[in-house]
Image (tube, rainbow, N blue to C red; front, side):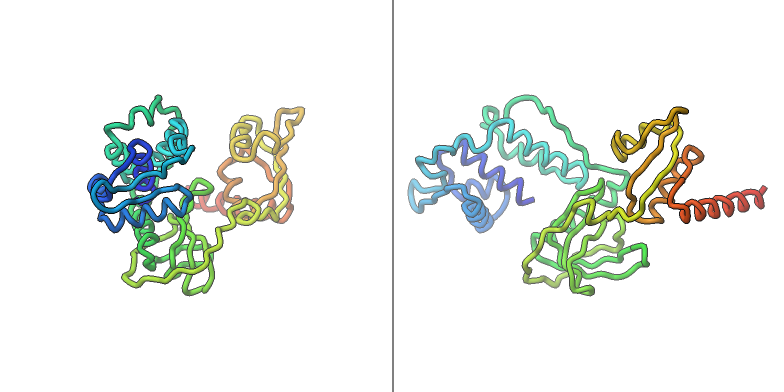
Amino acid sequence: MKIDRLIGILTVLLQKDKVTAPELAERFEVSRRTINRDIEDLCKAGIPICTAQGTGGGIQIMDGYKMDRTLFTSREMQMILAGLRSLDSVSGGHYYTRLMEKLQPGASDFISGKDSLLIDLSSWYKESLAPKIETIQSAIDEKRLISFCYYAPKGESSRVVEPYYLVFRWSSWYVWGWCTGREDFRLFKLNRMDELVALEESFAGREVPLPELSNEKIFPGNIRVKALFEGNMKWRLVEEFGPYCFREQPDGKLLFSADYTDKENLISWLFTFGDQVELLEPAEIREEIAAIAKRIWEKYEKEE
């Protein structure tokens, strides 16, 4: 993973006055060409690195750079390492462990203190997500197209995509890329992908807008909902919508009000509460829920 290598190289440069490209290549198990590209990327990021050829030469942070030893404080480095560990929790990789091995010895003064932030992004789908994330990461780095079968509410389809970003949002993983079939940028949920492969065909790249990840964009609230929940469902409402989404009634029930994204998701969500909720508005969805409940009752009555 490139980011952990860049952090590692920068940390080494902050610890030593000078280091050679072969030393870095050996430590991080990559070629000298890769190290040279990494040094260029660090320079582009604003780190004043200079190199010198020949005997006594090497790579170092420029003399006189006043912020060189305080670029990352110990606390900031701990935050970075917590982020790497969180990626390990879902990707199945060992970026954190490998980085720590490459930084030792000599990092104890720079990376000190007990970890106080633990992030676990894993889920029930870790076994299927990890290889997908690894495949997409490699495809992004190598600018290779990916293909997959995608399952969406409107049906399933085959997609070929130029991948640009892996996104973790709304407790799920997505890939943001250019869909060659739709000729537009799209956000694809990894859990809806099947038969994912990185193709041999590469792509040149294009100007990539960042995905619009606001709740208002992805989940437009076009259904005004009113529902009456039993009081023992307060914890779920607070967890999912916050403590101001309802008004407690004199009888202890909770009058819930919110904007919801679409009818199907709303109905599915309400059914997870069983008989602990009654939808009041919209009236047409209330009628649809009653019809669904009647069909369910008829099915179970028939079986009995």
